[in-house]
View 1 (cartoon, helix red, strand yellow):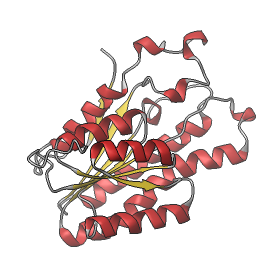
View 2 (view 1 turned 60 degrees about the vertical axis):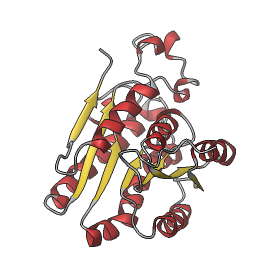
View 3 (view 1 turned 180 degrees about the vertical axis):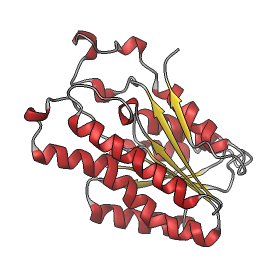
View 4 (view 1 turned 45 degrees about the vertical axis):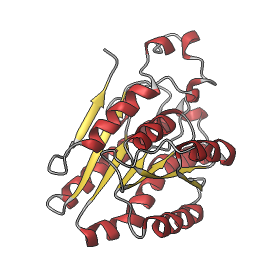
Length: 242
């Protein structure tokens, strides 16, 4: 049964969330459904995505964001659902791993850039013309503490997130005065399953998982950014554990 509230603050608005089947994306989807949003949830895991979409009364869009052809098809599907550009796009999908630069293969580096940087650009490029024509929209980008700070083992990840922050800054400059908002939300370490292969609790110098932000806390921050009045743009929100 759908949990979408047709009387909520986002009632009638179409919101796209990438990386929606787990972690921050799934927590955000649940909150936005309760706010009345009409959701297009994007992820590559069909089973988990379909289950969540059914729970929330959302539209599942199966897509591997590392594949540009799949992104094009997903954007067409979303455009058909929304009758044009969605009101909000949350570029949340990402990949993360740790390895020294000399142990990082070129293929792995390239895939990290594709998922974390090229895919968000592709979704922006797909929907921005429609937002311009309408004179409204909101592009929300999920950054990271690693989009401004350097850590050993983060050659691929930091390169992608620094580039993503640069993309956000360009968009913010280009969109000023258009009615389209651009927001960057950059959390510190978040306790998601992306950490499972790394086991930070056993790695010297890493933040223990119990001291990380939770997916729910970050989702609450993103929701706050989305619900800001249309006259207010949250240019950048950096979130850390107190």
